[in-house]
Length: 429
Ligand code: SF4
Ligand code: SF4
Image (cartoon, rainbow, N blue to C red):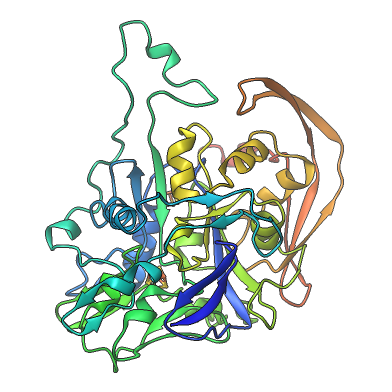
């Protein structure tokens, strides 16, 4: 095993290959607070990439209801239990460890899926990644437990208090999931055919369909269970990051070849998604590009957090955690940055509020933003994580999204404009 640096863990970790980093990295932020589980993203993906024979159970994008839902069933619970066995002291974060730009959440002191595999042997010898192969039944019902809540039994008359901030007593939330195009992919590490590769130009992880022999090692090894086996072709498939769109090859939407966000992102009705490309530096860290919206949300404000960073693959999907959910559950899922993320999201300051308007403002990838200041338009009382009230000032700033070359792609104001229809068209049926 080689030693690679995982900034989400704040330390070096074991990985089967030497680090080889792309110039740019496909990354995205999902705001779980806004999702309505309409599954438009799911169907946008399905109708684009997985509508053929043998792909019936293939949902590259899915939205599951936590805590009970999951596709395949219990994917995270199963792996967390396996990791617990290998980490008898617990999956511990040392938050006192020096926090820096390259280790912003402290240091994870437990074993990752790569390190936990060291003492595990299969028929082919020592495993490279600790994982499991879901059963066919696990893949059967992508929406099992949708909208099933959890919480203590309530006494009559107590329901009114069950859904009050800062933490709801009865709760669920929607978790949107696609392949994370990980920096250290478990799928790639486990493939005995070396059929899986990470593109140097954008970090998208792909399976070479010619090289794959369908051994399903990637399905077993992906901690997020986003590599899937297709019985009709007998090879594995996974999310391809809509790479033709990322390359700007959609002749209708992008005649000038500007890179476009993926189908699942651009279809999002709840405006919870933003996706882009972040610049990597020579050592594989993130280049300091403070006006890139993803860089701003993930690295600078740390309001968007990786999903199960303790697995060790350095996923490139980030989530703004749901503000009403018990914190212990969220810390297990997103690591120690949860409190700070929820605190900032509860009462976003001027710049943060402006940048959050960029979610689904257009289809093209935004590489940088600028803010033009506007007047103060409101003051609202918000509930903070400690239960106290705070006054949020709202300014009607205009945020401008720019392409790779600095070209203006869109502009959007904080206050949503209203438009009145010409009475001539009030009833146009
Ligand atoms: S999420 Fe899974 S399939 Fe996607 S790159 Fe990471 S390990 Fe591979
Ligand atoms: S389209 Fe957006 S709002 Fe609808 S389920 Fe998907 S992520 Fe949630």
